[in-house]
Image 1 (cartoon, rainbow, N blue to C red):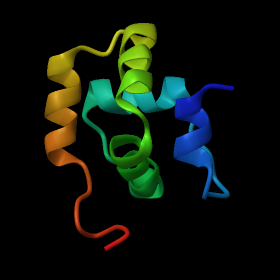
Image 2: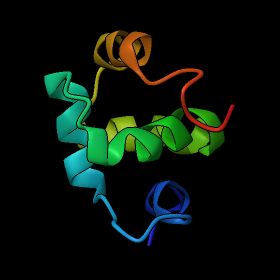
Image 3: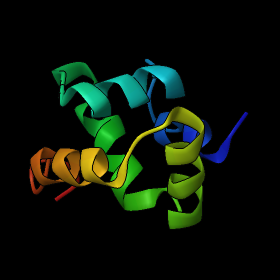
Image 4: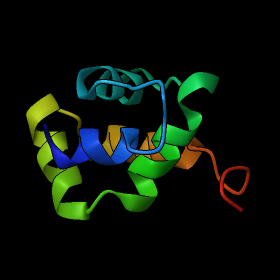
Length: 78
């Protein structure tokens, strides 16, 4: 089990696989049922683990940057 999977799913009953997370990022989708998981990905996963995730799932910097700009902000954990 990877640090990305463990971290993004630690506090939630419903889990998301890394493969599914990568697919959401690549497709630019932000489903309500995974908004908190995505927030955790960007705020709690170490940057080194994010780089490894990007390499493993072939997520480009541009795809991640574009997705980051639409991620949930301020409406989760504030």
